[in-house]
Length: 243
Ligand code: ZN
Image 1 (cartoon, rainbow, N blue to C red):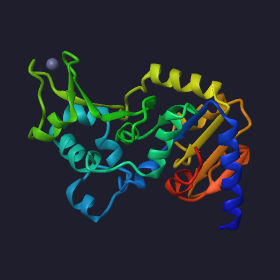
Image 2: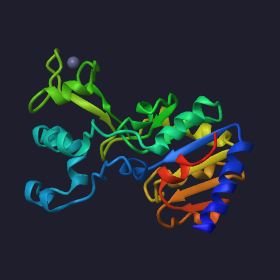
Image 3: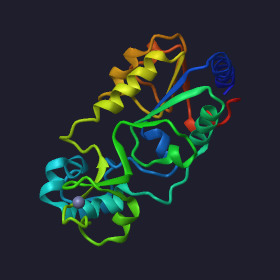
C-alpha cells in the first residue's frame, strides 16, 4: 500500500504538469460498474447457448441468426441500469477542467458519456446507437429494449446495433481521431486493459511523451515501457486523484 501511495503522488504530479491528457480504457473500466466481459462463459450461458460468445457477436451470425443474436444482445450486452463509477466521474471532471482532451475506449456501454464526458472515441461503437442496415436511420436503444425479437425500421430493414462485430472493420475515422490525440498527448493514461487486443497495443506506439501511465489489476506486456505502473482498481486509483 505504501508503495501505491508513493505512486499516486507521482500520478498527481503528472496530472498537475499536463495540459493534454488522453485516457485509453478497456473492459476493466466497465467491470467496476458491474458490467461483465461478454466473453465470460458461465453455467447459465452453457445451458442456453451452444456457440461461443465470439461467434455470436460476429457479422455472419448477426445476418444469419438475427433472432438468436438479439436474444444474446439483450441479455448479455445491454446493461442499461449500470452506473458510471469513480473512474468515469473523475475523467469527466478532468475533461471539464480542460486537462483531459479525449477518452479512447474499447467499451460499448456509453458510461463515459453518462458521467458527463464529451469527447469519447468508442473504438467498438456503442449499444446506445442503432442503425437501420437498409436506410441508415438512427434509433435509440429504447427501440431495441421495447421491441420483441428482431427490431425493424419503418422502411422494413433490420435495425443493427452500432457496434463493431467480429468480421467487421473498425471505424477508420474514430481510429484516426484517437491516433491524433495520442500523438499530441503530454500524458497517456491506460487503464483496465491488458492491451492484448488489436488495435490497443498499436495505439500506444503513437505516444511520444514521457508520462505513460498504466493502471491495471495485473501486469501487462507493456509495463516495462511505461513511466508509471500502478496495480489496483481503476476506480479507486483514478477516483482519488486531484483535479
Ligand atoms: Zn430503414
